[in-house]
Amino acid sequence: MTPEGRKTRVLVVDDHPLMREGIANALQAEPDFELAGEASDGAEAIEMSRTLRPDVILIDLQMPRLGGLDAIPVILKEAPDSRIAVLTTYGGDAYAERAARIDPDV
Image 1 (cartoon, one colour):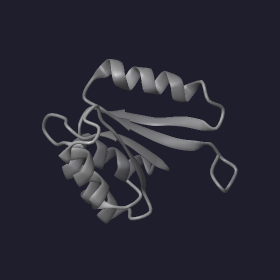
Image 2 (cartoon, rainbow, N blue to C red):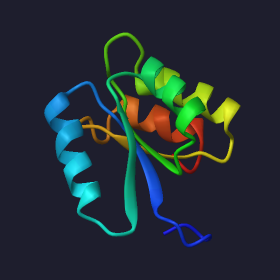
Image 3 (cartoon, one colour):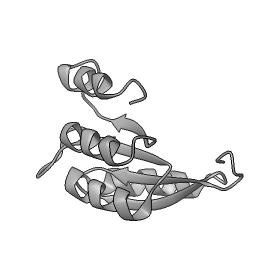
Image 4 (cartoon, rainbow, N blue to C red):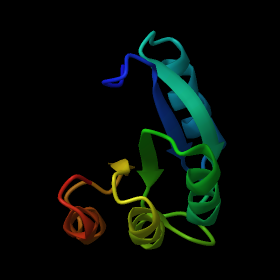
């Protein structure tokens, strides 16, 4: 729950529909979370972040059209209080390390 006592709204961003669906199902099973929306790439994530104003964005790093590495700085510039968690299967590689340098909370 947020400090205001409402559910934490989460935007899930991944180009793999099964991954998004799995995360969405897991979130919906948790009483403190609400699925704010789902996006399939970074461009959609930017637009949905603007309109939905989620509390948390779970975002993949590598996606077609616009990846998380390029979307994260745009989202943070427009909404600096956004909380972003990176989803990636590339643990420990240069992409994950670069994402961590965008913002210490990433």
